[in-house]
Image (tube, rainbow, N blue to C red; front, side, top):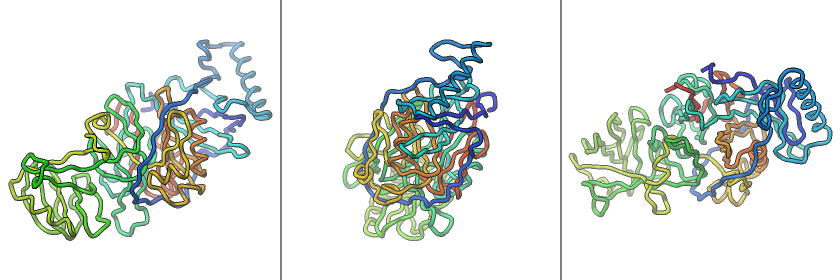
Length: 442
């Protein structure tokens, strides 16, 4: 991994600010986490103009490399311009100064950046991932490889062989007991392992195209190869504890060994066929799943008999089949709200509420934050800030060059790993994470 990733962290200044090498590179996130379980339809986002002087000190600038005495003189001038910018301020929001070594075209780099927002300066830890590099791939990691478990973020990254990692979707961090269910959508290895109903989903396709959209999935089931009555069925969620008296929930091997649900009627499916029907908690087969029916939904279980062929598929809530671009998504994580779309800031209190968020910690308060951004250049940005309102986070992501951006879980969950160490240390174990691999990893 060390052959591909720079351990050096260039210092950058945006909008007339300048980062000193003496600034700390770690932030302890101690604020509250976010727990949401609401329905909502979000907004989306996309593109913006940017990209100027990325590698000024000792690297190509407008197609030229300056070496020897001229290179030294150039670096001095650049340094003076940075100091001058600190004094008078730059007029362009995306004006950038570099001080330090160039990244050398490495696919994954880390840097500390200061972004000036009016009279306030926000310090960011940033990992930039070149998705166009053939050595790079992304994955979603589950804590202890189970939906509902928790694990130290750095331990998760090391266990999976990731060179970088950022915490993912919200989860029920304050739930008593060992199971702390996630809230947002999670897709890994092309499988939907948790279904969320709020916020925005980030997805990455087989050819590493990054997507952000407020996509909502429906689970459409069938028996005897028919989706028509009386062979049709449906499910509310995948791999989570019931949250109401009436529910239909699918449990796959990503949940663990057993369902963890002590009531209702459970239909056990192996290799696409019902093998048993029982009550309460059941073992989850490695080559199948368990469908648990509770409350008023128990009547649906009558449509299943031992030997009945069973299957289910995903459909997007607007009624379209999930066989378009989202069928190509291999890894995905849902959180939100949306910050940028097509280079424009789209976050507002109203848009966040439309995505299903209602708490002040999302709408107006300042907390430690984590965010994802997609740049026009093909870079993925993984960003943490020690404290910002959501509107400020949107400004930060735009200044860093993102054209699409979304918020992730924050507060004490906010964490960022690079090169097998923390650059932002979370205040607790986390539920899931977006992982970056370079020519390896699991």
